[in-house]
Image (cartoon, rainbow, N blue to C red):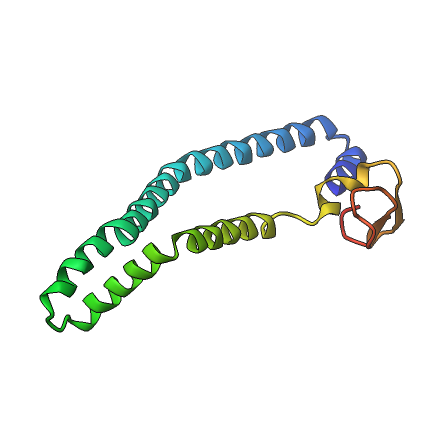
Length: 148
């Protein structure tokens, strides 16, 4: 806003707007590159987690039965791994629900509060001061926030 005011005073509004548009195009290009570059690592991470869960929940419990039949004392790390595998195998439903709940919580906690998602543009929303807005809409934005 200040750039527009300053460029209006100097008479360079067209040039300032051209620089502004070029800047936003560069920012958008970088954002697209970063997003496209981060897709592959996220897919690999997800596949790795799924493989590790399969190994812990299915393969390790099968092998732990074989090692239990030997009757020998296992090293501490091996015993820990077998214990986690048995636990995951025995409580697969609860572990799955906990993982889904954690994934849901992490996805909703990273979102903006309802006012920042657009209720300030909704009917029934009024600007009360420069510090925020208050809402009477049904979207749940009843408290002041910095969205306006």
